[in-house]
Length: 335
Image 1 (cartoon, rainbow, N blue to C red):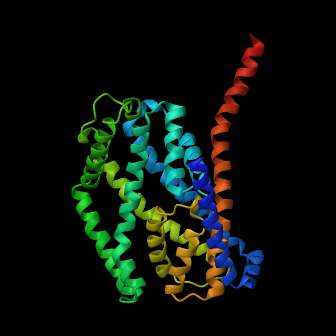
Image 2: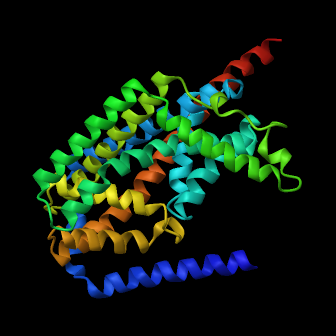
Image 3: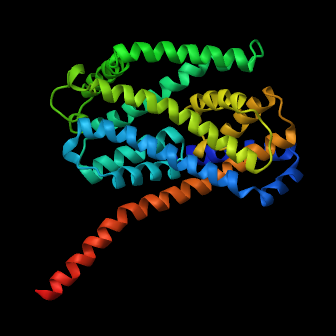
């Protein structure tokens, strides 16, 4: 009963915020959605596919290292990740992203909940690191203290220093991350009847949860690329609906928005994300009609792209099963 009441309250808050945004906006600008440019839309969708593939690549690295017995194929990984993105349009994003992937490993591949949670935690931790590298430059730029050029130079310097450190000690981030995870796991095991959820009878040592150094550095590098691809995806979408915004200012907005999105408690972040984007876009000087067009087209595009990618993921998983069934059919008939 409480869960249902909380769900209704979250939807009410989300719709109320969206209603306020629409009431205060210039809806005449939405007519530009009907004449969106197809080429930039195609680039944006291609970026969505690349982001999903890169994210799947990261998650698969972690799963293959920790649970090779699970036998996850690329198709499974793509399907689970795309399904998580789709449910993220209707459920709070932290719950949908982690919940769907954890449930998929638990139900389909008999991986314990805590171990499945660790694979998601490990993969997403590098996303958080990539966002944190942009935090100081983004704040300095968005606060008006630095120009876009100065903030970009600072960002490149920070990335260069962190990259140099991780080239020498690639397990630095993973070691800290694993130690924190195992500390939390030990505390969970003190709760009665939690052993069946936390996996092994004794907690793993931190060094047993570490990835190989090469894989750890790959996770870091791919996370940086994903953030730039997400910016290009959004930039292409805005070009498609004729909203003018600089790529570098948009990148800093994306970095801040992605970091804050983990706190969005409404279904799919509805309303919360739109309000945040409106604030960020107003800071970089966009007009009110452009802001409304940008945030609403982004929401519509996100839903359609997530649905298309989830369908593609389902087809990727279904195709091998269909071929196997087709082969079994003639064999059975011949026997």
